[in-house]
Amino acid sequence: MKKGLIVLGLLVTVLAISAWGFRDPAAVYCSQLGYEYNIKQTAEGDVGFCKFGDGTECPDFDFLEGACGMQHSYCAQKGYQQRAATGNDCGSSDPITACLLCIMPNGTAVEVSQAMDLGSKLNDMPSIPVPETTSTITETTVTTGSTTTTEEESVTTIETVETTEPTPTTEETTTLPPEATTTTIPEILCGNNVCDLSENFDSCPKDCSKPVGPADYLPYIVIIVVLLVIIFVVKRKLDEKKIAKEKAEFEKWKQEKGGNTL
Image (cartoon, rainbow, N blue to C red; front, side, top):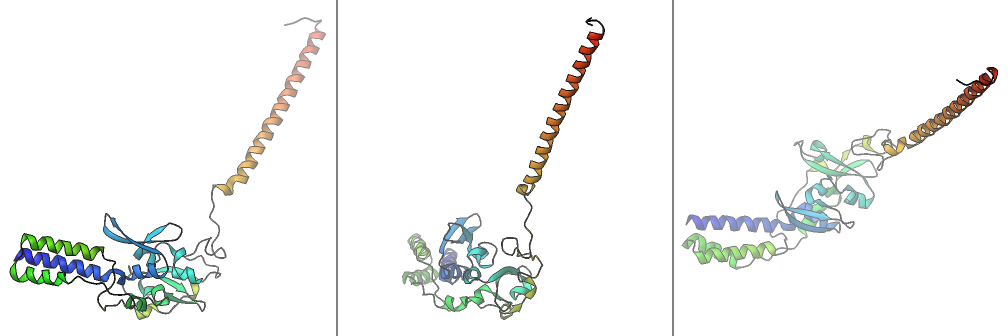
């Protein structure tokens, strides 16, 4: 009986995970933007990845929260300025909550999923067809106990659900915090002479100076090398003149001494 309950619990868990499928907002966000969504096995378990047209990819929730791939985001596609935010800026009292904000032309900041109306797109996803054998096997396992044959059939049903293209089967939706809809943040706009944390020389050269690299020192290195070469040549010429002068004075001295040598 206990073994039957364990099988039932595993079955319910797998079905719940599969039913969530593309209702995962990060997966829907990736697909709605026209990118390829894949699930990969990592050391932390199965993780969804969003693959972009240039061949690069990001973990799905990192992409949704603006932790990577910002150049491919909804904000970038629409030509809006953007920044990654946390805590209150995301409409959450939890300081570790992260999100991506699109800066609208009027200067207001809108959370990216709210800006693209991601909630309605979650509801529009089709349902997953769940095999009828699943409920029958579950009921048999609980009431009559688990046999070797029943367990093998249950595992087969789980594999079928996992390989089916994940789509939602419940009416649950992800609602976004109302506080994240419009947050006025005019101080982060490009052109305010302040280089914010989300800005750099490439995204806002008006506010951020170009980083200094080895190539910036190349002109100084060339000048120093040229000066050293000039110094070396001048010193060599002076030494040659000094040697010639000393040789002439030595010849003159020999002549004065009557041609005697040392």
